[in-house]
Image (cartoon, rainbow, N blue to C red; front, side, top):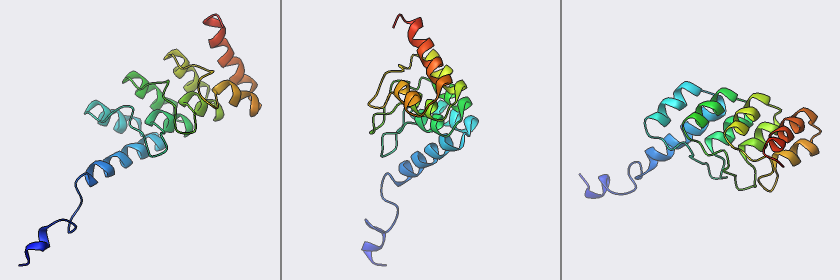
Length: 145
């Protein structure tokens, strides 16, 4: 048996399992597999796990129109103020997708309609989403804005 056979480069690199797990978690958020994702987070997966673009589990769930997953992540401490590498928040994603339930949950958790390079309010205006703008402005006026 060659000593190099079991050495570096012959099997999975350290961390490959962690990377594969992270990809599975991101897919669970995209697919709205709330119960499975919540169980992993409860078992120790970081609730603010991000992909290479800075999209968190929360941003992915909001963008892919899974308000129940958004709510579950918020209940587990997901940060509604995190923004991705493009300056977008979960609130921006939920607004773009016209998801009133996700927007409402994010606002209740403290998400800021004016946060980010592309804010949720700007998104509502640019894409002609008057109901979303009204919902977002209602949150702002409740805070004295």
